[in-house]
Image (cartoon, rainbow, N blue to C red; front, side, top):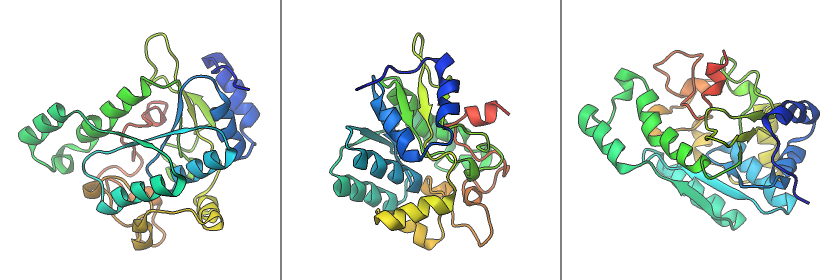
Length: 246
């Protein structure tokens, strides 16, 4: 039976109650809520969530952001996952006007000079905001150990004021918040889940092609993202509250 979407006042209590629960239990909780809930999919953590949702037997939705600058391997991977699970992946595209205006004014690689925020804002944040405006909650693959500078305090359930609309509060579920990268990959190998082939070439955290590179041994996984910028602020804005709360 579906449960009512929790209010902001109830989220903290739910986060505490489910903090020690398995990711599977948190996924099932999210999928049991009334309203529109969807999994945000781009990488290794997210495909684990899709697998857990698939195994729960509950209906679920998946969406993904196509910035127009992804690796070829990532596009192929999206299709692999779509076929593997027999699901629809709702692809969200940026509005062409703002992309064209930015590129015409500043070229294709302005982020190397101005930092990545403007480009991410146009190609990722705007289409994400448009998608989340149609949802009551979203399920993400955030983990505490992904970025010590911005994600170390991520709860398993949280309100998302950054993307909440007027008169509607958005809930964010982070079922893997307490898992490590090793636990994610143990699950992937154990369940024989498809993964992005770029991981076999040293890419750990995979974003847009111009802004992602492999990491060296003993480097943190987020060091391959926007490597020319401040190391403790490796966020594109999808989870801006992680920085705003600091």
